[in-house]
Image (cartoon, rainbow, N blue to C red; front, side, top):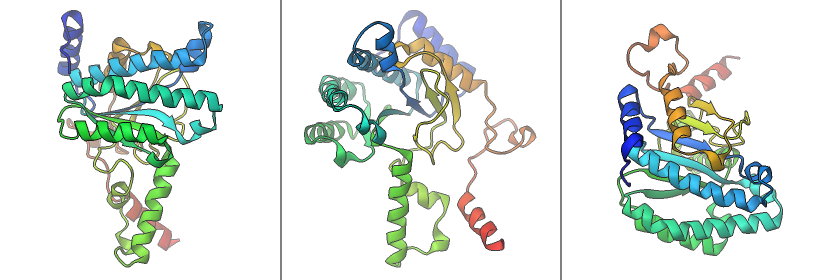
Length: 276
């Protein structure tokens, strides 16, 4: 990842010294259309400017030491938008990937996708397959693009996979734990987000990472995604560092170090159900 210079480098060093840098940041990139409308431009102009924000935030995450960045790029519900806009978004996705792939590789970024990959146009699929293969051995930031993704799709797919294993005798119902469910989700092998950022001021998670966001800290800003750049990201990280992450505990239990994420929630729920 390119090096920060001057005042920007000082700000990053201050953040790194002032508290924990979130290991995994997830972002709901909202407001492209409103950004364009405010300027009397077609919606596609907002999407184009939003790509610049993706580039800047990806670079900033790499510089700060964030390990995973997951971007809600295209939801399953987005397929319901006007066909012209969907076609433009697919072309923009394809051209952006072609333009940025070599840069990601040079900067040691590993690219991954989550979602219903088969729903994407074949040309887009092929471009992503090549980019993922090219960057698979990189050890810096992992950039995860959620494409044709929704949290309900993710959980539904996991439940059906687990049900098949139970039916085939490879798994017993009492063996279905939180960890087993997590291992069947699209984010297998990726830690749950520490910080969820939503731009444009909307107060909802829009069917994004429903299981994985259980204990994520949320940061909502009125800034529209095309205007969300380095300083806005630093503000989000600063807010994260000022939070006390309790994971369902009380302050006295947390102590000086961060509490581990709770385990066995599903198992406890199953036991409570059997007692009803």
